[in-house]
Image (cartoon, rainbow, N blue to C red):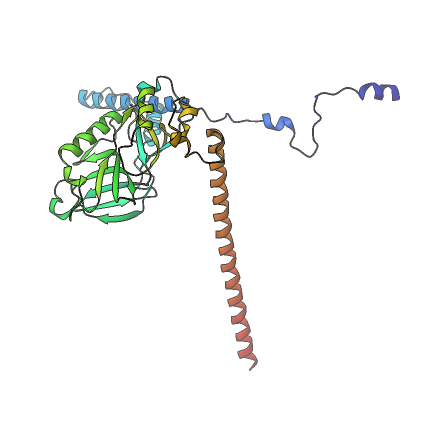
Length: 353
């Protein structure tokens, strides 16, 4: 028996012995969920969903025009169509209304042909709406931060009957200017469902032809509105963009990369990428001047580690906020108990007297 035990003692199922205090390795394989798809795959999925939603809408219009009585409804197709459209539902009021970007981690194929570059000045992202004789600026959270008159359509009481306008802007506190990145609505005409290049060209023509007054300050237009130009994403153009002077007087914050086929969606989307200037050599392989590289933080190593560090920082901030809320609630309960005990003591004193 001892010989048998000694012969079995040298047999090991795995090269690394399992830790009895850790989770069993087989647990990690039980009902494991697939990891999130890459940015490029999600980009393709969103574009495909857009095409399907557009095809479903055209099919619906054809059926209405034909007024056919032999219409067959497929519940499964309707549910899929509703799921696609729900991804692009308009938020209530202006909360999470702006189209926000992701870090450009995966550079797609034919990047120079499928994307447009828009430089962004340092400032605060906001949504500007002019309607019914007044203009309001809303933060990302949907909170109104400022109300003022403008020369935008419907932006002041003298032109309140000219419809309304909705602009995606960056507010610069330094020179009191709204830098317009994108156009959403103009003169009661919505271009949410239009592609990026059409929206940017429409913005250019409207600012040059119909809204020249908004580019200068006046009594009815206390803040300037300046359009930010867009560029193609060829390596030569991007290198020249980073080497030359920016089209605005404030410092550069970063570059937005819009997919040409993207519609204006709400919230974060993989169809809009974001990079800092000093990330160009790492991600795009495009050289930048030494002055741009000097802006790189000392702790910066690469983009993945930078993203992970940002997520950890946000999670730590959320935990601190939760702890502050819980401590405030605990203090509130403690104060209630103290007040209650004091009332009971006072009642006992009154009854004793």
